[in-house]
Amino acid sequence: MNYSPFVLSLWVSSWAGIIALIFGTLIAWALVKIPFKGKWIAEGLVMAPLILPPTLLGYYLLVVFGQRGLGAWFEQWLGFRIVFTIQGAIIAATIAALPLVIQTIQVSIAAISREIEEAALIDGCTKWLLFVKIYLPLIWRGLLAGGVLGFLRAMGDFGTTLMVAGNIPGRTQTMSMAIYDAAQANNISQANQLALILSSIGFGLIFFVIRLRQKADDNS
Image (cartoon, rainbow, N blue to C red; front, side, top):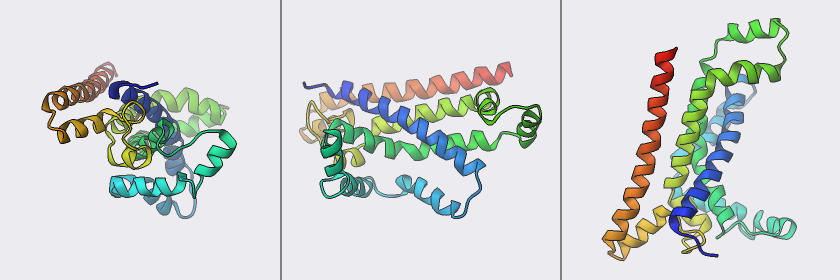
């Protein structure tokens, strides 16, 4: 079944945003709260997708998930391919979005006062209840901002997703790729329409988050 670039973009970016938010929260928590040797190496690896050219990052993912890497294992044991599929597009978009999510949530976690944690533990709060009852209410704005940024970064990704998933109309062609194809074909009308939709989604979500945070600050 073939899908429009708009539907594919929403599908890929939604899944990528959710996955990046889950893993990004865990990684951000570990980087801020858990002391371990070589943390600077871990932070460098986490931030690498922001520094490496998208095509280079996509090439590394292509090597890892290709038939000479983990791709053969996925196909044999799980029954599906990664490269040039929608699953590959989700993985690529997730990797591209992860650093922004982690950086945003790290700031919120680092801002939590140590005294609040110690007081809750003294009162008999378990680590799980501490996370649910104390941490989440304090970092919800960071989680919201990180989730939105991850979603938008995944939706706008081009190079990394192109290398891993390809540009297959109806199967892996997202809106960013469709804009590129339309511009290459000198179909300016279609390119403008897609650009307007993508820009409206991006600015709309950013303004929504900013307004929500302003209301929260006014009520606090």
